[in-house]
Image (cartoon, rainbow, N blue to C red; front, side, top):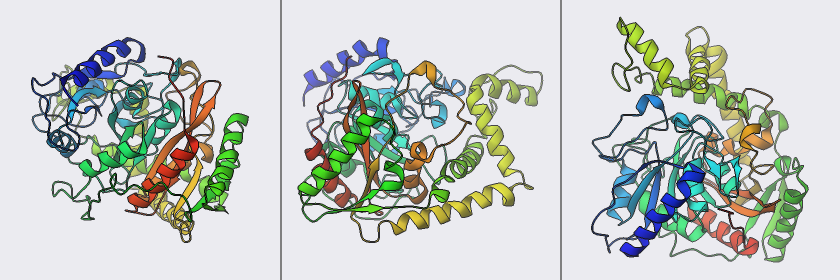
Length: 454
């Protein structure tokens, strides 16, 4: 890659921005482009919760509108050391809280296949910039499908590795027991290469793993013969969209013809139906604790007031959207001392039961395969910023990989009325090579040819 590639990427980013509204801050580009490193000269965008030295980082929240960090996150540092060029910071649901990318401080992000539809969230800005071919690589974070659902809606590869595989030092958090850094690419091989650069222990993050980092892209093997693939039928049988159902059934047949050993798996529906309430309880409680410092006094944009309490109230009221404030109320309620046993700790216990049941699915499988989202991206006007209605586990099931920390990847499968949909593959912890190998084989079988209209 050379300077021309960077200039073309910068031009494309500027071209699509008025339509997609995916960029929060453009970076100043370097005079010299590195020729050294695994990602030498590769343009990349970062989700706006990934801290970058001297480059505004807002997490798409009004309260952080003026935040310019004085250090690099480990992710940014490793990308730069590998020769990548950071082009921009991408929009996200505010503080990562959401699944639509509607509630960003800068407004909703639009899907490049249909500008009237959502990108998915919370990493929607990163997803659409890869889908629209502005950059070949974007970094996101995944707390409850925040990489994988936008990938499904935008027709790209969304990869969430094992919890702790990529250090989170310098990432503005959402929920610390669930947050995972991951990538958007247009191929499995590119996802494997990015993992080689980003993975590995860093002592700044005590949750990061000491597991050895492999040469994932060099070792990639797309041969499906003998691969044991379990189909999570409890989820996939809930598909109502006829195009998605037909494509998924055809994929299963194609995998068998490619030599994979395919088995049907079931999981207790009662446990699956508890995914959403457990996730909301734990994630909102952890978010409330993590963001208590955003008060206009210790941190964040300060609004005027006659007392410290008035300043804090005004700063948080004006600095956060109503959606985020509602989540903080729920989180605070769960953390009240009189409610912790009844709500927060009970949710943690149920999370363990769900995780144990999910783990049993992998006892005789290399990967577990199911549909990613049960339908295509909805229209922006048809979605709500406040998702406190009826939950369906076929919408929420990808949170299983966050509960367990398992590595999980979404691939584009096909188009329904011109809009992308995808499939999810998940493997046991730190079996990224096995997951990527299988995903490469599935990618080859699918041969997705979707092109955005933008």
